[in-house]
Length: 352
Image (cartoon, rainbow, N blue to C red; front, side, top):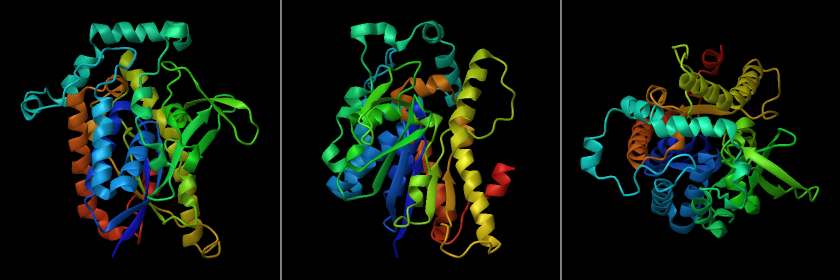
């Protein structure tokens, strides 16, 4: 029996390689079918690759397209630092890679990183003038948009933030373009806002990263035609025990809190509806009973930082992919039988 689920894919720069690993493992489960995907930033890139590959070549096609995406990501210069490596990672290199925390610390306190962080605080991305180029554009432009916008495969929703209004905009179907995905991944202190026409007004609107208003947005997945199960792939730790004291630690925690706030708001709304349904205070079917699941590795993500999000080191990407596969394996082993039946996230405990 096939169980249909929705995926909610968080953004987090290079840490999106963890989601790559999760998707890679889920694609090996023939009894699980992805019906809808809501993605922000790196989650939007992963969602686009997943859908394009599924439409073109089924599960193996999705695996191949995701792999192609992250090979391209591993060769990106992020406008702050040169790519650390641009060749595929060998098993020998993975053996000799330092522990994740040590690698993250080395990257975070490298002189080039410190200089680049100082520069971005005093220099706008608009200062580049005619020399400005979004380093993600070649990566995103390489997608096959005929497949992404087709009626086949899972429904795809891409989230971006309207700079003028601060509201989330959801791009779907033929609205999902290179610009829409670049807008979803547009960090305003690094990239110039992406301008896209609003079809309702005909006015050009500027967009920033979707993480500010929906990381990712869950409400598009509440459509009656989509299943009740929403599996969130979370790559921004919800909790940290230590109080940040260094400038880098403080910036990192601000980033995590900011990019989790919209998700937590929507989870509170889901928890409220669940309470109403459980108390029979609304008619059955009047509101959707969303079943919430989560795949994450907070222990690993706590060892990383904003810096590791911004530098797509291929060795780190490979480590994150492996961690994603392991986390998905654990979720499948523990919770696969709960899909379609009950939530596996205790929302009251999480939100208290």
